[in-house]
Length: 319
Length: 154
Image (tube, rainbow over all chains, first blue to last red; front, side, top):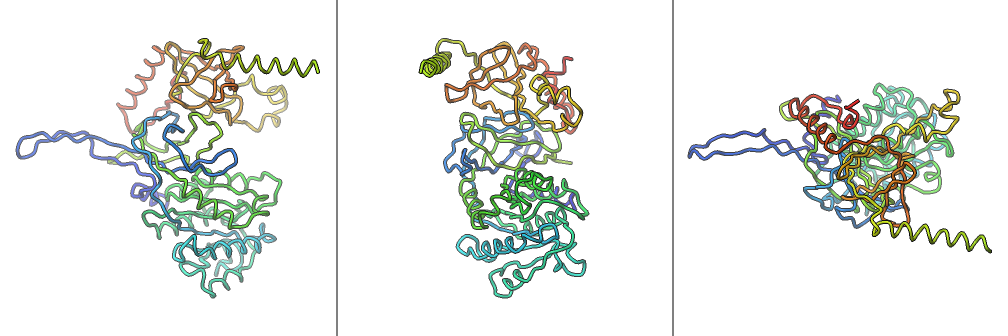
């Protein structure tokens, strides 16, 4: 399944490594030699936030440098506003026993999210759940699709209100399922986003946390996680939520935030990030096969924080 | 009152001296070409974490490590905490201060101090870089640990 995603990565435009034919000299019928060269380009979508964690609307290419596999890149091929103009949102909700006391609040948040007609078209929002007791024959081990393309119908709303919490937490499996689900609806110019409501603790997944993260990265999905854990403690679950959000270029909302602010605030953040997004492209600095680490850092104003995925996979052509 | 005046005077002198450092030529110039998160240097660990029981040192923090290239010398400098950043501008200004390297950030009154982990002659460093590039070009599909750029002499 993961190999399938690696292949798909090469086809996706979110993060494109374009490999053209290797350098080759040939002659056409007229005897004029034709030269072909190798061009490998890395394309990174990102946004920046200031010291108050607000997105920065106006950036220039001299405001940042890219660190690609430790190498500092300042020469960019292009720097433009992102052409993504709308969102494809999957709300992925943890219904397991460990978050049972907070499931009602989370579902209210999800309903608020679904109700925002002016922000997301009806076809672009779906709600999935994992854990709980409404997951079918396996009692929540497999993720369930609560609604898709029609979440604002009265039937769908009733279904969302009827969910019951309990059982184990297949978080990593659910993330992989969610990334795969959203990719089936993928369209150009639409940003795929998972808003994950969970405490970050997994108890029963077949897949590992690393595989879940790879699935999200391979699909170019941004994860915005809303921590449903108890506030005040830095748990391993919180750490995972923070890691997966930062690694995909999304954001993490702490339990304190989740308690005081509703889903509307999260969605506003997602929309503001979308509007403030830029795309930078540069020549692949090293043809080292495998995973390349990625980080954007400020060149002058050290109060700026840049948000983008933190790695990409490079596979030389012909392999 | 006297103390406040003294403190204000000291603050002004410090600010002015830092602001004048560049025009007076105290600052040297360089470019950061590499960055990685590595181990924090031992000298910055607390006594307890360095010499205490194992659990005291269990939480390891990563610190940013930069390769700073100047005209003659290449420095490997390390920050003191995970979020201590160097502005990755084309040219950065720095000076030596108590065996540390102080980097000037845009706000002229502020300097950020880094431990110097290694120093290499630029010619030697470039030679090593070329060797690494050749290795990469010879075997494009085999991984080469380019983080050994400065350490390959050891």
